[in-house]
Amino acid sequence: MNLVNKQVIHKHFGKGSVVKYNNSYIEVRFSSGIKKFVFPDALETYLMLVDEKTAVIVNSMKEKLEKKRKKKELELERKRTIEYEKRQRLLERKKLIKNHKLYNVSQVAFWCDKEEEDKVFTEWKIFIGVKKSGVNKGKPNKLIRVHPNSACIITSRAPDMPEKDRRILGVFMVDETFIGKLCEDGYIPAHSKYRLRLSEEESKKMLFWKYYINERYPNNMTWNSGRTRYFDNLWMAQILQDIISLKEKSNELEFVQQFFEHFCQMNRLAYEDLPKPHGALVHIKETKSKQAKKQK
Figure 1 (cartoon, helix red, strand yellow):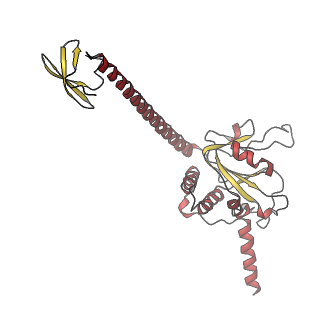
Figure 2 (cartoon, one colour):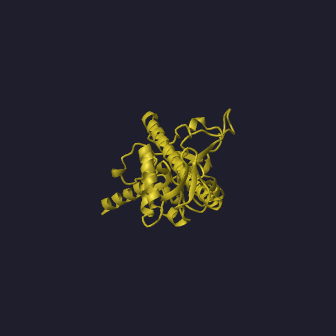
């Protein structure tokens, strides 16, 4: 479409003809001189085209341009919203880290039955369990140490599998708004981002007792009763660090590294110099090795 020499009418300047135009401006010669307008916005707004066919084409062009502008504005608004929410989460996290009293043992390990595994990793929430006795018998348990700095470790073992071979199936940070003592339905929801299910092969390499140890009975690997047990923050960091090693050649590597750094930040851990895992499996192995050396 060529607009040069096309006749236009302006409310104040009267009739004129287009001299030249580009993607930004259009120049029109009036009897009072050449005037410059924004293109194509001014056409059919301040400058009325005399030729009706050209006017129709220009209006169509303006409509398409307006749609592009609105789309671009919506995208910019979406990005601004995401950035704002990101800043808000960062401020909330800093506030939480500053004010929340951290427990050294505020992570939770779950005994997960085979039939509920898929449900946990599909719905991304897990039931804490109910009280077995007392006036509140049958009511959901509350884990009062669990806050947004906590992670849930999902573990399992087959009925014919020895307890020492209990596997870690996955892990998730709890939802950013979850407070254990305020929980009423007995469910711990997962964080919208920091959650991970391990593959079958990966879980075989992540043994629960490599990290967990009962200091009073370091040679024992028994879960006994109960669905949950609190887990040391440091042990959880070691688990995530080992998962990073598992994911070295995976497209999930960057995500797991972010997960690890987020966890350490939330729990005020210096992740650069974490000690090696020293759970019951490691302790028993070291004890046997020392005894063997003494016998020689």
